[in-house]
Length: 255
Image 1 (tube, helix red, strand yellow):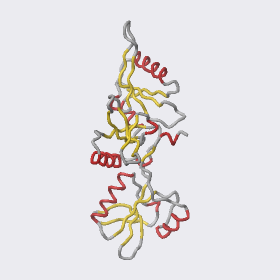
Image 2 (cartoon, rainbow, N blue to C red):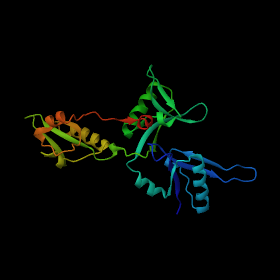
Image 3 (cartoon, rainbow, N blue to C red):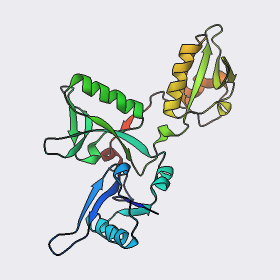
Image 4 (cartoon, helix red, strand yellow):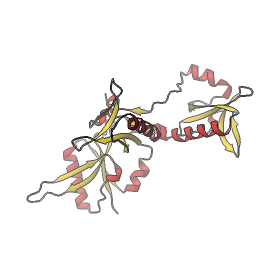
């Protein structure tokens, strides 16, 4: 069964996952060579164990602290399904791939080949929104790319809840489910449905459009089981923020 070879540069740091996209054995007049990529779709499938051993040896030479893995593509996709992030890339004038790092003082997009500086976005929709803004305001030929980190993307996990406040009596409860066109609401946060980011936003938009009898809010799932009557006090006492961080830079995680 074909396998891909991928690795973390250093297990003691938060880092991007790299994939081996090509390998050439050394010969009389050709030096051994290896090519790497940040994209899993570039991962070269290896079937020969001898070649895999040579590839792993070469990776270790290039990255002495690397943690190297070799497994089937589908196993990787299953294992890393909540470790996906999104970046915005382009090819520079030297034919090298570089990625979006933010905007400068003139609000112009900046890019770098230095991965620790790159904006790793938690949500694909957020990356696409930024992409559209760059395309509308510059001539940069940009695209989004899915990358993987040795870090769980919490926004891909069920960490959000939705509250529904009746416009008739100002009573707030938690969203449980839709029953036809009716909302099923519950009084405790433990019984509320938990969403990942994309699903929460989709449901929030759907509810706003299709049931205008309530006001809706997306909140982080509480660590405690909170009665709907105590939401405001709980959020104040526990200093619960409604702000959602939408990207990260590895340089700030590895200080």
